[in-house]
Image (cartoon, rainbow, N blue to C red; front, top):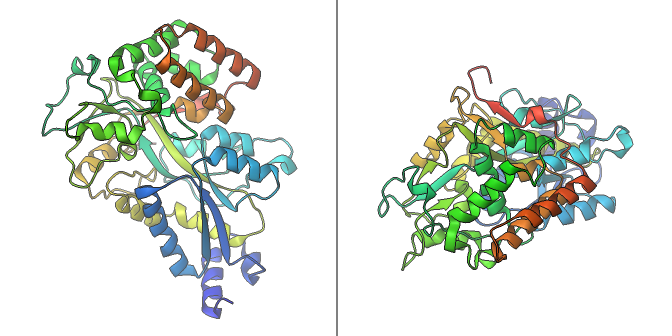
Length: 413
């Protein structure tokens, strides 16, 4: 049994956050929360530090379920009628798939009563379906970055980024293997022209086997050159470690800082992956799948608070970022500079990563196609893109409204 003071703290938190006060009676199981997450290593440790702070403040126990196959396990749990209270949603497409049902009884995600005004766009807009908040962005990433070791390699110029044979490339990542290539291809398309082709692709009006998309795929394949050999079975983190290996096997890596796995004390720096001011971004959103546990509401509100967000980014070894514009203190110098790209007045245009906006089945097909392309004996992606068009025609375009997927940061964001 919990102590009386713990129950009172629980009720005070729920009431203070304008959440469901009726649950303060503390019915069976309502002083504990289950949450499903995909993280390990530093990401898990940073999250768990926030969990422990919440438990100490409220007396509510948080049971953390860790799985690398989050999409599959969450789908299975929801289908069986036994979902966790909370889950980190694997994509923006998943938010809409679980929440965007005309009949309320068919909606799996529950609406949230948490303020979102402090969140930057496009993250803020993507939390809402039919005007109600269904998810909270607990951490975000900038994907349009190229990494190098300044102690060995000078700051790369745009010409250097077009060279082949120097890239660290690994595509293996368990159930989501292929995502590093998918992110990179999307980033290349985002940098083309005025960026309209990227937006058309996300909205479903640009076919996979169209000239702009085909060009992005072949540009990626030509760029990585011989680095593609063995990449389909090479772990992404291990590949990035090649920048500091003995002997060094590569000098440049593409992707978000949190994915690089830089060791403490390892020298690293970045340049944007293109000269445009368009950035591919992503976020981990948390959503609620049960409607009768006020402790779950209290925890999700706690995660949304600036204090918890600040603690999270400072705990995660200098690699996490927040969509909350009030989070301004980043302890690592490189982290601080990247965070500057996410300031409300930075002038950067943030576009959500393509695979993250698709329905999970379409994004999974995208990842598989990347793996097939990396092992194919030809650089012509036509057959793979035809197959992806067939998959998308069968499963449908992204449910996410296209006008929510990109936003330019200005002082009014």
